[in-house]
Image 1: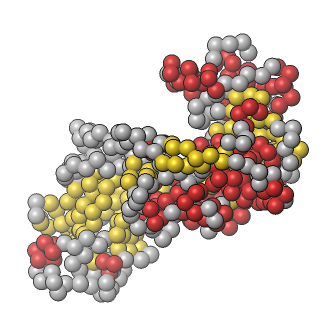
Image 2: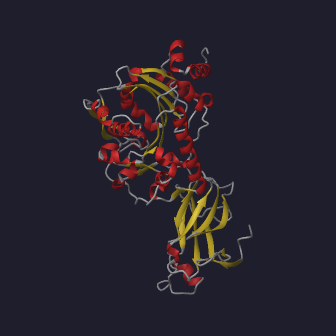
Image 3: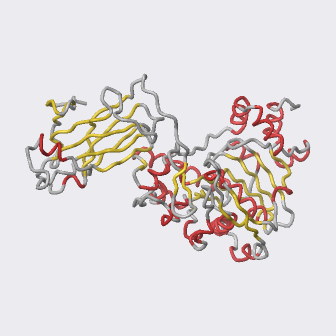
Amino acid sequence: MRAIYHAKRWFGGVWANLLPGMGKGAPLRWTLDSPVGGVPLGGNERGWLVQGWVLLDKVVPSAEETARIVTDWDPHVELVNPVDVPRPDVVRKILAEDPDKSDQLRCGFRFWVPHAIRRFRLWLEHGTHRRLLTTVEIAPEVEAPQQPMQVLRGRGSWLFLDNDTNFSVDQYAGRLRLSHAGLSAWSDYLAAFARLGSEKQIPCRFLVAPAKERLLPQFHPLPAGNRTLLDQVKALPEAEVLLDPTADLQSLGEAAFYPTDTHWTHRGAMMASLALVKALGLPREQIAGAFEGDRYKSRMVAGDLGSKLSPPETASVEFLVSYRYTKLRVYDNGLPNFGRLVVIENAAAVHEGTCLLFGSSSSYSLFNYLTRVFKRLVFVHSAGNIDQEFLLAVRSDFLVAQTNARFMVRVPGLNFNLAETMQKKAQQMSAEDWCETQKLCVPADKETLERLGIARWASEWAVQQGGEA
């Protein structure tokens, strides 16, 4: 690729770069004010400050309204920010124009890149054209400030996730998008997942738990963007196997999500479960009848957001009290998060079959309902990643992969290795983690494990715990 810098002019202590043409609307000059020499100007707990300006060819009317700065550091996702910040200083000194009369007043950009990213590229995107501006590397001696609590206060008692590794706020605002490579990877995954179901001749669905801020934007302090990662993936031809229960959840309104937590409530999980069983080809109305007698009780909870505040903040939420799946567990390795393996059996379930669920944190509340639909529910915490050897061993009648919308920055795969994940997790666990694992663990005898098809994985986990294989 030929050198991007065509000429330079000194301006305001930094270089103003003249770029070669890229058609109508070509960038004439641009400057990166921050970072300079790998050092961001000013400090902000949200991330590294990226600030500068771009002047476009006046041949294109209102060109600054469609110009965007694209930031990439990962092949699958990229941040997109508009060039729309007023820069009267640039208009006066570079164009020698009156800012009040100039059509290029809004030629600046200003945004933050998370501290976890220390090397990234900046592109100018204008219409169908894209041009690499520069590669930024944060200097090694620059230390990131301490991360703030990952909570964004909304209206009323509503709290939202902020400054997390999944770029939740940028996803909500529509600033984060999947790249061409990211969309291609999602296309490949969904196609391969559908083939698995076809090869096994079992119904399958990829269930996505939507972000609560997209369902309840009226409580979020920032405006919602036009398109999310979930919207991008749903537009793919291969997305026929994907299930987005947003429409079902909207019927519940505020009752679908916890004000002080990122997850759906028990009632939200019920609606998602009904949407799922219908998508799997089961009679929705008949199954809904099994939940009609459910009783709920309000409880004050802090959740995963409210507990991050000091003092913790709570909100009243209804919990299912007439049914508990935990009493029906026949095996549970108790492992926190990724690598957990749970088997639940309910002889009184509506359907005689086995459902295998490769899910995430939102799956746990589904257990309250899916265990009354399927006689056996086998759960692997993998956020939609599939262990094909495990799938073959379990011999399920239904296959479900589940992830949360905010996790879609990472494309799941079909080469997940549950045994290897358990081994690595065991090596990283603290004494406190082991204590919590023991509290949740439900062992099973060899005969039961063989019947369930999970003997190998249960045996390997017993070895990790220091027991007998």
